[in-house]
Structure formats: C-alpha cells, structure tokens
Image (cartoon, rainbow, N blue to C red; front, top):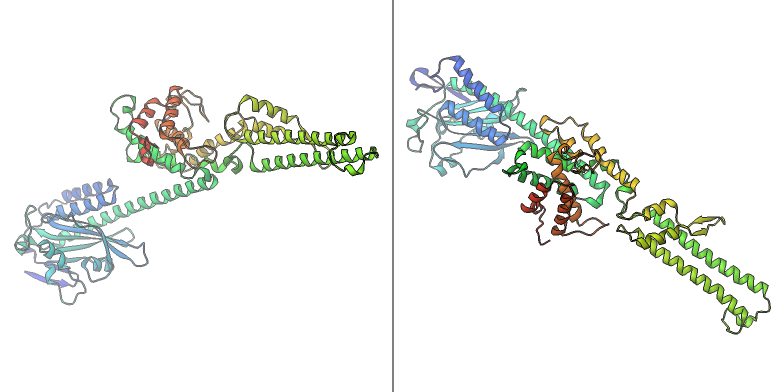
Length: 557
C-alpha cells in the first residue's frame, strides 16, 4: 500500500514491496565496504566524463536501476544552466544522446532538485501530485518506445552544501537483467525505498566531492595552461622574428616522443611516455626559450652584424668624411688661385689643356674623385660584410684596410672611420653575432632553467626544468650550457634538440636567412647526427615517420 508523504517524496509501506537489492545484504560492514570500494573507484578516476559514467553505473548497479542520467550546474555564463552530461539505459542504449544545456528552472525534475536541494522519490513519474511545479518530459519515452515509472532524483552537494549537480535514477527493476519496455514497465519495475535513498544520498555526496575535485584539477590545469600561453606570448613579443617557434617546437617534440613510444626494437624501445609525460614534454618545449626575456632586445632581434643605429652612425661618418674631402679640395683650389693670380679669370673652372693652372686645378678634382670612389668602394664593402653570411678572405683583408682609414671630425680631430668594436662585428666570419653576443644569446637557456625551477611543479611535471635546460646540449659534449654528453642528456631533450634545429632551418619568418626545404633541413640533421651532435636513431625516426607532417610539411616542400 502506497501513501503520499509530500510534494518532494513518496514513502512506501515496507511490508508490500519486493526486497531492495541493497537490503539483501543486512550486514552494515558489507554495505560500508561496497561504498568504500565505490569511493576508491571515484577517487582514482580523473577524466570528468569517465567519472560521471562511473557514478551513474555504480548507482544503477546497487539499485538495479534500468536507466539514469547526471546533470551538472554551469555558472560560467550570465544565467546558470543545467548541463545534461551523461545518460545510460540498459533497455534502450542511448548512444545518440549528446550533452546539451537547458534552463535551470523548477519545471523539470532535475531543475527542481538542483534549485531546492531536495530529493524526489516518485513511484510513478507519470502520476505526479497535481500541486507540484515539475513534470517529466514524456517526449523522450515516446521517441524510444519506453516507459519511465519509478524515479529517484538526488542533489549532489559539495562539502559546503552547494548543489553542483543532480543524479537521476529511473526504473528500479525487480531483477537486474530484465529489459524494460513501454508494455511491461508497470510489471517489472518498483519504487525506490527510503533505504536506497539514504544510501544513494551518501554516494551522491561522494560523487559531488569527486566531481568538484576533478573540476578543481581541471581549473588548475587550465590556469597553468593559460600561464604557459601567456609566457609564450611574452617570448614572442620580445622576439617577433621567431613568432610561433615555441608552438611548432612543442608540436614536433611531442609527435616525435609519441613515435618513440611506439618503437619496439633498438635502444629507443626502452623509452615510453604516458599522457602526463607527454604533457611534461609539451610544457618544456613551449617554455624552452622563455629565458630570452633576460636577453637584451637589441641582441635578441639582431638581424645583421651591425645594429641599425651603429650602421646609421657609420653612414654619417662616411658622409662627413666625403664632405670634408670636398671642402678640403675646394679650399686647396681656392688657396692655389690666391697663390697664382696670373690664372686667367676667363678660364673659370674650365679645363684648358694648355693652361698649367687649369691642369693643376683639374688634378685637385681628380684626386678628390679618386678618394671619393675609394670611400664609396669601402662603403659597399662594409654593407656586404654587414650581411650575416660566410665572409671570404678578400673582403676580410679589405676590412682591415678600412680599419686604418681616418676622417677629420667637426673638431678637427682625426678619428677612425670604423671603430674596433664595429670592425670586430663586421669580421664575424659566419652569422651575425660576435662571441660575446653569442654568449649573451646562449645565456637564455640558463635564464630559462632559473625561471622554471622556481615553479612548484607537480610530481608528474617535475622534470620540465631539466628537459628545457638540456635542449642545446650535444651528444659529444660540445653543446651548452653544461657541456653534457649523451648519457647525461634526457631523451626528451634530445628529441627537442632535433625539433628546435628543424624549425630554425625551415621557418619562413627569419629576416636574416632564407627558409630551407624539408629535404635540405633533414640533410643537415643527418650531418649533425653523423658528427655525433644529434641522436641518429631519433633523426631516423623523425625522417621515416615524417614527424614534420605535424606542421603541414611534406618532402616536396
């Protein structure tokens, strides 16, 4: 015999009902053991969807429920919404149902429980009390040829008592293996008992804590992901020439590491990477150049051997030297004319071949022209030497000649046309950096390590600083900053070194060099491997598995 208790629940006369599956075990220790086992399973599940499915599965198992669903409350928008997250139905598989959001109102069973925090225990959802605001949506039953009868809806509350979601169970069966249809639902289902409600309320509380823990973990990871993204943005703002480099290196390194994980032969078979380790590799790769924030911007963005301001100053010196030569020539001619008043004025500046004075004046002009041409030659030589490419011996020798030239400044003092510092920069045989500047650039690795080691990494990410610190090391010990050898270099760093070099060679955004093809870049990687700089097995894997395809590259590029 059934009696209505309130608008939010219906109790049952215990002597007229079939036994609950929970009541089959009257040993409290056994029930507690079941709940502890479920709690352990919930605690060990970190994926939200898997967690919600586990909550629903265990709830259905201990109550012989045919179906059920889980809702979460979403406060991210201006108006709170109820998210339909997962659903299960033993009799009617629900593979086609997807997550959706619905208004958080009292009109639905789940919405009512979410807003009030009160449970609903309905013996027959089609026969709800007339004075309640909620009602079941029968359209789903109609579309599935199904019949919802008994329903238990419970709030999932966190430790602060806030409702974060709703657990809804449908059709408590008389036997767990029965298939429920719209024809037999009244015969094979039964109402939920208060006993089950109390047990499931405890389970719902455990579930809420697990969900909140999962959401907190996800929030922390999103927060850190945002921090990493912001850090990468800072790097690229400091060095616009390498925009996108960190992302590309991360994509290449992770992809190469995934390929290493799949290897079953050779020395690489000893290495494997799970999801967390791949995440560790990705963070290390994204942040491998963060130390560039400690490198002077002028050195970091240097495109040629001389800095733009230096070149402008040298240009003004050359212009001043030419004007001084022209002024000296004019003064010498004027002085000559004063010393030789017998020069016919009718000749003016014209060159009269039979006039010795005109010939003397012409010699002044010729000497000036010769010196200016020499000056222009040296200027063109300087511009050529300023380009960051391999410098031949002849230009190097002429640069030494240029270093000996002087000009008279505005104070009448003789100064070198180019300074010793400028000459040192122009004499760089390859590239555009002096040894001192190269040391400054290379210091970014140490800056990166000093920055990363200050972060309180979790156990799963604790090697991020070390991986990033070693990405410029070479197998033969010629790398920097520690001069490590192969056995001392993490395999993740060895993979990152390949990714870093490949991207530097194939990037199209470097103003100081042209982009190399995939084939040419791969050839250089092999040359480095043959010289014991890079791991040859990793280079082979990089090429054979076409890891570069992760960037959209192919061998025809």
